[in-house]
Image 1 (spheres, rainbow, N blue to C red):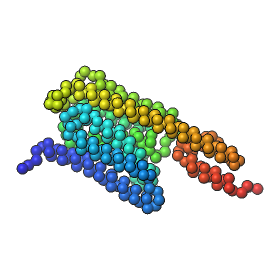
Image 2: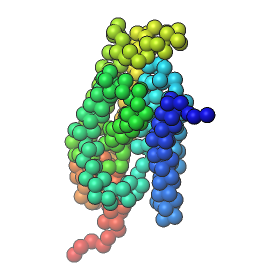
Image 3: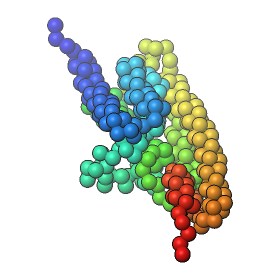
Length: 302
């Protein structure tokens, strides 16, 4: 008995999407093992976050992929899990030492420029909007290779978008907490605009779903409106979480900066507010404190 075209397409799509997922998981586990042997393994919560991101991708691709071929709102959930939630968890799971072997490769080191906030946001937004144009969206639904490419780009540009906000790569000096706040607002606004288009439009964008919608007892425009509502709710929850994170980050950085300045004053050491702020923003408050401690313990210069 020969496999039909749909079965072959499904198998091809599974290989194209789940194969790289397994490779990424294996490479991460190997790197973590190497770092653990040297005493530099990522924290347990970071490892859990990374593997949680992979699990999220696996759940989206295996649990929703068939239904996403029939209902637009299921496809929207799949895309949000891949491009937003899984990408966020993966970024939280990486550290500088984890990325070090990759960044030693010349091509990937040069690609770090794409994680600059001024590039990461527009690249993510362009990717989001272009793939939701009917010609590309329906091509992904009809062709396994295009569908795999769509998912890969959602994940890649999602990871890149989160990397400059939450990742270990150095950020430009102007990307302070205020800059991060504006970045979050810009990202969420771009997503909210698309969500509103789906939520309030009375025009069906994708004819591909019309037959399947009727089979599921839902009008095509209602399916589309539900997809927009799901996107809006996910955007709101994620934005709220990011605002809380920024508030806590700002409070923690203010406390660390003040502790460094008070330590320097108590030991008669020179430390400007600007230097303390730079160290804290770069996550190097403990390193600066150690330098200050070493300086406080040094004999006076005669």
